[in-house]
Each structure stands twice: as structure tokens, then as C-alpha cells.
Amino acid sequence: MTSAVGYENAIEGWRNDYVSNRNSKKGWEILENLVKMQTEGNQQMETDEMSENCAAFDDFSTNQLIKLIIGDFTVKDLLVDHQVVLLEFIPSAHPNILRHVAHIIREKEGALPFLKTESIAVGIAFARRITDSDAGEEIGRLLAHLVDNEKICDELKFILKNNTGRNNAMNRASIFSIATERAGISADASCIRWLYEEILKVVLDKEDMLAQLDAINIFGDIALSGKQNAEKMIEWNIVEKISELMERSRQNPDHGEMHLYGTRFFCYLARSCPQVLKTFPDFVNRLMFEIRIFNDLGITDRLAAFDHFGCLCYSVEAKEMLEDMFKNTNTLDSTLAAAGAAFAMGSIEMKRCTIQAITLIFENATDAMASSWYGLMGDKALTQVALDNVKKPFPELKNCIYDFWQQVFKYPTVVQKFIAFPGFINWSLDEKSENAPEYEMRKRQVIRRVIDLSEKESNILNADAELIGRLKKYLQPSAAPAPRIEEMAL
Image 1 (cartoon, rainbow, N blue to C red):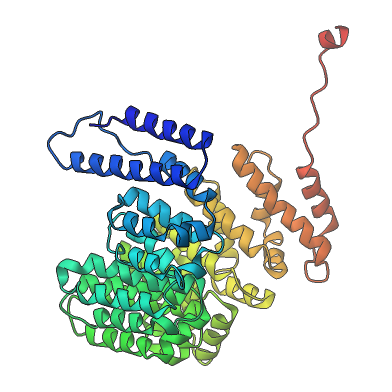
Image 2: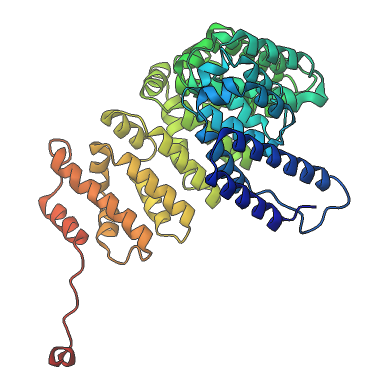
């Protein structure tokens, strides 16, 4: 049985051996020995012979060794000249090794085109290991670059066909994850439309609710990746199907989870493609109603509602659409007022999540829009609540408030509201308001932002010259104390 120390010594020995004789043959010899050692170690861990000294394989040292060896190979040497060796290596390689190999090949310049042409067999060999629980995630990232090859897709379809039923849900999820990875690197999903359709089948399958929710999450991640991917899901009728599912589920007394995941999907979709707010207004109305009755919601539902609301209002276009949708009612005004009020109510965790959602809302806005929305959320009352809470000894909440101020202080009109508020000025000029260095630094960043805007946006920010002078003086380093008489004598 290989001990942890023995394993590390072997890795170091192989590394030294390779460095002294760097060539392709030696590299493959070491990789084969590494596979053998880790496979034996894995078999021993599954028996009763497991002991405290048994090797816990060090991913870092293993990765460094593999990176050193494969890094020396040219792409042609690795994927063409030694293709047969790779084809023997991949099917039996230990997952710890295989995922490192997949990662290094994915990042190796010029490797991906070979895996779709001359070395397509290697790409297929990787595809056949996609369901491996330890290596599947990294293999999925590699395959996301290769699915525009029909043979890779055919192999994945075959694997998917042979992994039906509830017991194989994890295997299907590994394949479905390729869609998310592909969305992150390309706006062209046409080559895996078949995969989107397979995921949609799971979403609509009432027999396995957990798989349903996971599939909706996958579509949510895809929606969040960008406008083009979001629009593809609308074009392919996926969004309509999920909307219909949410409506049907409302008749079910256990529809809570479906409502939660479905709302998250639509809010992520709205973040990338705001026009869905007008296409599917029902979920908007329901979410805004939840914000208005936040105090009647359970902890989980309240936290989720504000997280979703932040995504819903993320873009300037989304805010404009909401203003237009509710221009003849007070729905938006009362919802924003409730969001501001929620910051003053509940536990520290609730306050923290609320202010994070509000911060997200202000990430994208015009100056006039930011001023208007800040005013609807409470204006002076919101400023006072933030000041009261930043003085409290709760680090996570303090950091969230400083993040919020850093965000809203991009807008001169909002800053004007702050400098007109006596409590904020008194806190800013109080040298004892922050004792910890990290918070003093963040406070100074806020003050510096006020000063910068007073100089760059003087036509909007009407700051009193005397006040700006006092703020500048606050930022100056403290003068060193005068030396004592005995020190002067020395």
C-alpha cells in the first residue's frame, strides 16, 4: 500500500527523472506509472485495508507533473503521433489524472482543432468518460469546444440514450452541463439544439421533480450567459414551455419549489433579455407582489424574492420597461418603497441580502433614473438606515453597505442627496466613526468619491466649497506628534 509520503516521493522522483531526460518516451512512461499507482491506490481505498497512512493523492503535485510533461509535447506529437497511446490511456486513466489531462489539453494552444479533425478519436474517447463523477466536469468543459463536430454529438447522444431512468440522473446531468459550458464560450448553440431539447424533456417530466429543478437551473445558467443564448431559448419555444409549466404547477399544493426555480429562470432571462418582462408579465407581477408583502414571507422565500428582484431590475432597459409597464399605477413605486423598507427590518442576514439586491439594481442606471429609484426606496430614510447599520459591529453587513455606497456614488445626483444629509456629513468628518483599518480605508474611498465628483461634475453636484475643504483635510495623513523635550535633548 502506497503511503502519502511514498506517493509524494514517487512524484518528486519522477519529476527529477523527467527533468534530467526530457523526451516524449520518458514522459509517457512516467504517465503510465502514475496511472498504475493511482489505480492501485483507488482499489485499496475501496477495501478494508484502508489505513491512516494510505496516500491521499495530492492534486497539486500531480497536476504540476502532468503539466510539465504534456507541456513539452507539441500538439502534433501529443494528439497525432501518439494518438494510439492516448487512446489506450484515456479509457483506463484514474479520474484524478484524467481531469488534469483534459484541462491541460483544453488550454494547450492549437489542440482543439486537432480534436475535431485528425484526432477526433481522442475527442470521442474523452466523451465516453463524461459520466465519470470525478473527471466529468473537466471533460465537459473540453467537450463544449468540440460539440460543433457531428461525431462528438453522435457519441453523446448514444451515451444519453443508454442512461435513462432516475438512477442515471447524475450521468445525464454531466452531459447536460455541456450546454452551460458551451453557452459560456459561444453564442452559437445551433449545433446542440438537440441537447436543449433533451434538457427540456426532463423539465417537462413530472416523474422526477429533482431532475426537473436541476434542468431548469441549467436553462437559467444558459440564460444568464448572454442575450443571444437567451433569445435562442425564446425562439426554440423553451421559455414558453417553462412558463406553461409554472402556471400548471400553481394548481399543485407542492408547487413552491417549481415557482422558486421558475422565477429564478425568468429573472436570469430578463437580465440578459429584458423584453421578456413584457412578453411574460405574470411572473413580474407575482414577484413584485412578493416584495410588497416581504414581511409575511418565510426566511427562504424572502431572501429568494429579493435576489430575484435584483436580477429583474438589473439593466437600464429593464428599469425603463418596468417604468413603462406600471406608468399608470403605483405598483412600481410601492414595490421600490417596500424594498427600501425591508432593509430596516429582519435579521442581519435578511438585511445583508436585501442591501445586496438593492446594490445590484443600481449597477446599471442613468443618473436621473438612479436618483428617482433611490428616492422611491426611501431617500433620506434609506440613507439614515444605512448610516445606523454601518455603525454597528457586524462585518458582513458593514461591507455590504460600503459596497452599496460605492455603487450609488457613481451617480452625482444621488451623492447630492447624501451631502445634503447632515447625519452623513457628521459621520464622514468624525475621525472616530471607524476604528478598524479596513473600514477606515473604505470610508475614505467614499469620501474621495464625493470630492472627485465635486470637481468633475460641478454642474450637477452643488457641493459647498468649505465642506469639500473639510473632507480633503480629513483625508490628509495625521501630523506626527511633537517630540518630547527629552527626545530633543538627545
